[in-house]
Image 1 (tube, helix red, strand yellow):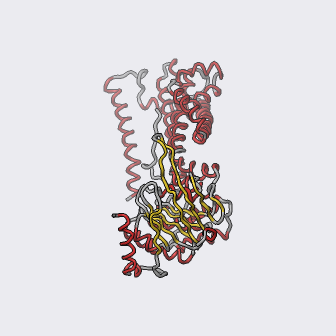
Image 2 (cartoon, chains in turn blue, green; image 1 turned 30 degrees about the vertical axis):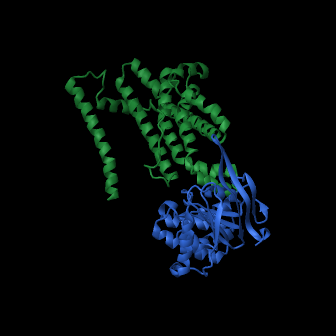
Image 3 (cartoon, one colour; image 1 turned 30 degrees about the horizontal axis):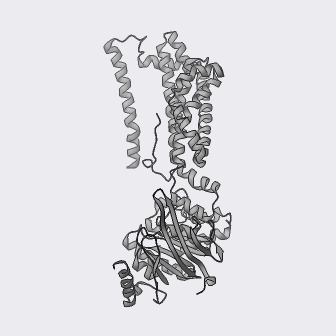
Length: 254
Length: 263
C-alpha cells in the first residue's frame, strides 16, 4: 500500500516532551499507514506513549517530528472527521442518551431531523433501542460505552479512534462488547485505530496489529491477521487465533 | 415506605422545636427570669401578632427582603462573572485571585459604617454590604467548580472541533453547577446577615432597624419577634435555593455535591 492510498498515514512521527530534567522521548519515531476501511490495533504496554499517539491523530498535539496525514491533509489542529471513544464513556451526565449521541452534531452546528433519525438508528445499532431518553446515571458501564460508540460514529468520521474502550468494563461485558464492536465494524466499514493492551482483543478485531515498545514507543512488529470475517465466538476457538495470540505474547516476554 | 420516611424526617425537627419552646416557656417560670430580659414565648407571639396583623412590621419586612434580594443578585452576579473570567484567563487568575482571597480576610462587617458614609442610609449601603458579603463564597465555589470538569471531556470536545465558547457552556458550566449552587446556598444565608448588620448600623427601615429601635424601648418581645421573622426568611430562602439546586442539577446525588464552606 502506498502512502497516497492510506486514510491515515504517520511518517516518522515522534514526540519529545521538555521536562525540568531535560527532553523526554515519549513516542517514536514511528510510521504506520491505515487503509480505507482497515482496522488497525495498536498493542503496547502501559507507558508506551499510546495516549500521546491518540493526541497526535486527533490533532490535539502536534508531533515534534514527522508527518501525520489524515485523508490526504496534514493533521495540524483538531478536525471534525475523527470519532473518538475513550476508556471511560465520558458522557455528559446532564444530557440524555440521545442528546449525548447528538453532541458532535450540535457542536458542529449540523443538527437536523435527519441527524436525529440517524442517532435513533445508531442507538439501535449498538443495542440501545428504547433508551434514548434515559440519563447516563441510569445505565450500566457497558451501556454507557455503547452510547460513546454511537456518539463516536454519528458524524460519519473518516476514522474511528478508540483508546482502550473496554478496559473499564468487567470481563464478561468486555468480551460481549468486543464481539458486538466487531459486528458494527463489519457493517459500517470505517477505518479504525484501536489502542489496547489486550492481545486477544487486538487479534480478534484487527486486520493488522502493530506492537509498540515501551517508552519511547516504537513499532517493533506488525502482525497481519488473516482470520476470516465475519468473526465471532467460533473465531476465538480457532488454532490460528490461539497461535497468533501466542506469537504476539512472546514479543512481550523475551 | 418512602412517604413514611419523609413524614418522619419532617416531624422529628418539628418535635425538637416544640421541645425547645417548652423548655423556654417553663425555664423562664422556673428560674424567675424577668420578662424584660427574656420574654416568654407567648409574649413573642403577641408581639408578632401586633406587628404582622397590626401591620406595622410589613414595611420593614419589605425593606429587608428588598435589600437581601438586590444585594444578593448584585453580589452573586459579580461573583459568577468574575469567576468565569478568572477560570478562563490564566493571567487574570494570577492577578486577581490572591487579591480577592486577601480581601476576604477583612471583616466586612467593619466596613458597614464606611459604607453608610459613602452610600447613605437605607437601600444603597445595604445593597453594597450584602453584595460584598455574598461575593466571596459564590466566587470561590464557582471558581473551583469551573475547574472540576473531566479533562477527557475537554479533549473530546476539542477533538470534535468545539470552540472555547462551546466548551465553556456545554462542558464547564454544567460541570460546575453543583459547586455554583453550593456557593449560592452559602451566600443567601450571608445576605441575610449583611442586611441586618447594615440595618443595625444605620437605617430607618428594615427588621434590623426595628430590633435596634425596640432595644431602646426595652421591647424585648418585639426584638425576638423580628428574629423569628428573620429566621423564617432565612430558612425559606435557603430551602428555595436547595429546591432549585435539586431540580437543576438532577444528575448529581446530594451527597456527591461537594460544598466548600468559606465561613
